[in-house]
Length: 256
Image (cartoon, rainbow, N blue to C red; front, side):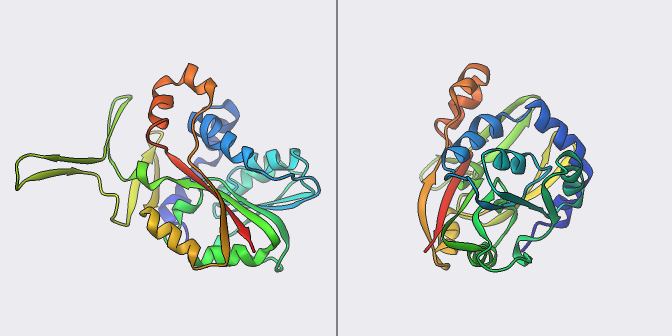
């Protein structure tokens, strides 16, 4: 199942604001957590052909190209995001597309890179098989996604302060109060920045791993990233939380 219409509409309408937030560095969970970890796992990109899935407004593609890549193609299901990407990075190639229906020749890419896109997809099997076919032998698919341990909890927001509960409390021998639900696969309806409606999927780790296991990919690395020391100084609460309950998980899959 591709990204749903509500989420696509939100990204279309928020595209320029998203690019502005990217430029202003208003994304500590990305800039001080996910991005440094993803970049630490990148292979040598010199003269490599790269496919960037869920490229958003293009900043990720620019970063990959600046690291020596021969070519970078950015794909996003949001036309609004792609329009902004084309405007901001006219020298790079961008296309509107669905990861399940990519139109490229087999074995076209040395690396497929995807930052925080896969949790918008309910079933990974078809996209993974498609990505596998586009990679050259021994090449890699590097992607980050939501960590189900973190997103299983109940989340409440009061003003600028948040609470996330995951676990249980026994009230007596026959009554227990459970907070969150790790095992139940479900669509989570969320709101970011006050008015940005976004839907994504929560699935237990076993479901994610089973989808990967049904492909010919080999998991060669897996990382639950920690925030940088800069975050420890400027975002102390986030740093403490992420040191115990990781928000994201990163997989490196290798085509055998």
